[in-house]
Length: 292
Image 1 (cartoon, one colour):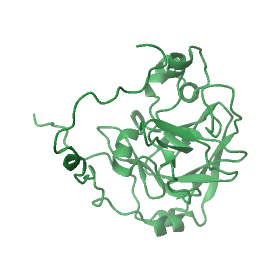
Image 2 (cartoon, rainbow, N blue to C red; image 1 turned 60 degrees about the horizontal axis):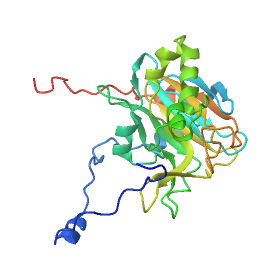
Image 3 (tube, one colour; image 1 turned 180 degrees about the horizontal axis):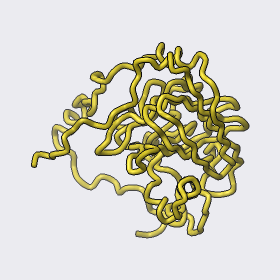
Image 4 (cartoon, rainbow, N blue to C red; image 1 turned 90 degrees about the horizontal axis):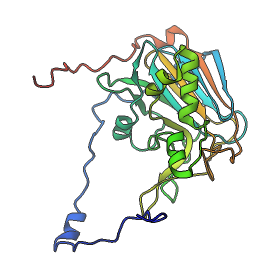
């Protein structure tokens, strides 16, 4: 294939006579979630009333930092300076084999997350790790291009794809940033930490798919100074957040070209009286016999 020829070839096979009939068949939602316990906004609003700040972690531009959150605590990712997007990884703090499962979260809640959505863990655990409880960008919705914020589409910028496309090495992609943060926090080597870094929640990032080729796109994030995305920890969490080298992702990433800003993670402890009756999420009850 010659360089620069990336579009799929034109249709080579004739459509059947019933092509339009087939195309007009109504879609079916794969995973209806109406059997889930509903999102209790009043519970979280009450728990938030007199919560106390117990930790604050600053994430430098083009870098990442790790943080811990106990089950029953809130944490907020805040944009304290200028517009900036971040890549978030979550692990079970007591078992790093359990981590955020972006693919299943996307299948359950959609391509972009918001208040009331949960971040689910990988198999065989499949439990909510965190629930999104507030979002100052909830006004954005979906724009005319199909773009929305806080996506679980993109995997994270990484040095391997950058080398493939741009033929140079850039070491401050979010993948590398998250590896360094996890290694520094746990004492692992970079080689040990890398397989544990996984697909992310793209916090504040504005993305979608193009109408014609259905390619993943990004555009300038609508995030403003002081905006935040808030979570409630459903289990003990280890998190890592990268301040993406793309800045607000209006033009490019995986380079030093974009203007970048810091991000901040604030961890809050509500009073125990407000959590009365709440229990940390339990792992899947599936027997794991797999029909054998």
